[in-house]
Image 1 (cartoon, rainbow, N blue to C red):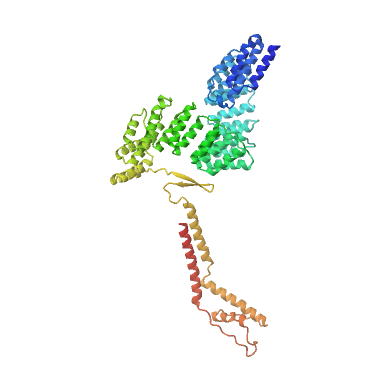
Image 2 (cartoon, rainbow, N blue to C red):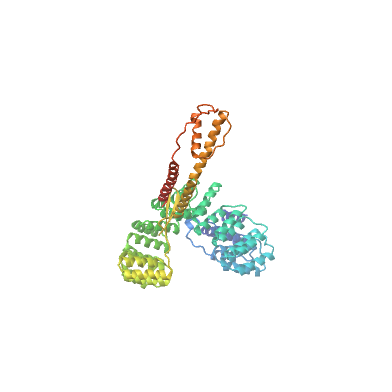
Length: 633
């Protein structure tokens, strides 16, 4: 009875208290030392199965910071499984899942085959684990075999089986087949749509993914996070921020994954104010800043030039990984804090964080910007010897850039020639930039020749060589390089810059003197339309004549009716019309009898006056049009 209670207590500890592999080992050792396995053989299988299940729970959950860097081996759960004489389907499922979680898909499939050879009937939990292994292997034929097995045992309608089958097809790039499985599935949930959405995003089909997103009956945080991540990965940064704003309007709280994507988009667009709003939302919502979110915040503030804020966030966060350290180090590099960068690298090594290739790339970049040639030489030599980091082309390119900036063109050339691999465009381009800076035409010609062989369509090398020849006053060579560029029809890729003004990012393209040319052309068209409309409103000379005649008739009729006279028909003589127009002001001196009164005649205005008014209107419109055109140009 005492042993049963001890077993129950240990099993409860396994299920509820174990948060690491080390704790599982401790409880397992207690089970062995207390003799629970030997005294109670009937419960041994259950204890072993519980240990395996707890192991999977630990490795599938996010690792805690103290245990983040500890490697996990499959040997321990495998040794536990081999102690079970007659494994149940639960034990088989557990060991298959262990191999899948540890990215050992071949072994997972092997255990499934071994299970079937022992005539163990699979259940609904077996096939999702095996299908995940097929997705990791990208073995479509094997996945179809597993699908036929699920059909044989009647599990094709199971939502978990269908979702993992959709995942296999999406992982293999067969989106249409995944749609077919989704359409044929009688039981689908939000995970089914999320798997399709994730497959479309990874395939780069963001428009189709957005269509699926809009058609989804329900959405969860993973749905929004997947769509935001897709926009960021495909460089649709503005769409990512628009979708984030839509989330907030709908009252949906973004998770850490979504916030990482939004901050990444803000850093790419240089939207400092928008990124600060996201950071304020994190503070207000009291969101726990993990290593990924900390990395995104550090990267955002560093790229926006706020290196002090980035350092504060880095120091305030306890959960850091290698990516967080690299983000801070690269931030110091791009902001030209060379000395601070070297001190930070020393601090990184003291904290036992093993640097990688990205770390040294940032260090070399920072030394290049700060002109720290000797320090860069030392670290470059220690990469492989001291830190065990292999040198890649990007490291040689950064070193060539540093030496070229420092005027050590000969040393840079010797380093490139002694490389164990052939140089690429980045390596030779770095050397070419140094040659341009210090006017070394001979080495520049060799570097340019290598670039043209590697990438004939690179237009930047022609422009750089043209500048080098112009600075050296070698006009014949300048003409030759330009003719060569024109004969090959090579164009230089235009660069662009971003600037944020009043919360709006404006993009400026190089070699474009009028970044708002389209808007100006629209304004010019509007100016032309405005002039046409104004000219149409200025009456012509004939129109003015008709207006005066009609007005005169109306006045004559009013005067005659007021004196009881009949309405007379007037002829169109201009002088008579002007005489009639005066009647309203002066009236008639006497009634119209046999003698009849006389009407004082007013001399008519000069016809040139109307013509002058007409010309003046046209002149005003034309002058206004010219002023608008000048302001728009």
